[in-house]
Length: 403
Image (cartoon, rainbow, N blue to C red):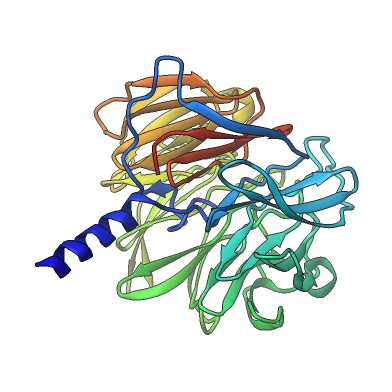
């Protein structure tokens, strides 16, 4: 009986705390399964600390009590390791930065760092991939993807957040390589697949019909790759007709269904996978056409922003299996979404946070608070009850729940 109680306490403790070690969190799906978030005070949750930072759209990653931020200051890309509890700097690793944004938006890195075991993997806006020791900031290895694989600059630099699976770091680098797996221990090439140009979407690992698959949404469309061997399971073209367009929404996998979405007149589709054969379940440009942000899935429904950012987006809930719009909420402009338990957390570009039940019936904000100034486009991190959010000037830490 005592052993059973101890085991129960250990499991409860494990479930009540959760790190955020990569883009879209531990499962790379925008969900947080830590302790339930309590009701906030009328003036909003408590801010624990804030600090000035450099440029970039790269969101924070949090693991083992440390926060890792990838940003640019002057002519250096900096991977900075901080104490996640108080923001104190533990170490910095700087390298030359020579990316210039052709549209004048931001010259900083785009891809979120990935923390795996004892290393941190970063991909700079100009395609330099690094593995760094998480404890010390010492460089393990470096690969210049533009020189090695011919990776192109694209419209807005290189933005694929590294995906570590087993012994490999998986990336869509484009150029002459397309999709690559790099040995996490050494930086050497393990395999290469397709010749697809790079997009701004990051890959995920999904278990579909009993088999793990690496799903990439490249410039050309969907590619399913065997993560260990590099063999192509299937592809599906999904690219806007106009050249001045990007694919940026991370794929969503649920059972044997895969959701893809872009903007620029192309829209979204859901594909069913049956023994590596694809069937289109639905596709249109009216349900949930995502410009730059990704979508979350909860109990058969998708939540995300529909429409072009510069024209004003609408927060929507859409039935995964039918594409039917369950509800829409205009007026938030654009932003990002996250699922925490059974709640939807909405982060707007203007620095607001809204929370409400994740239900297909309606969206009713049970709390709404201004956390920081615009413009917030980097995906936040929610780790062990603390929310980490950045814009182009500041990083803040807010207490949403006790750890």
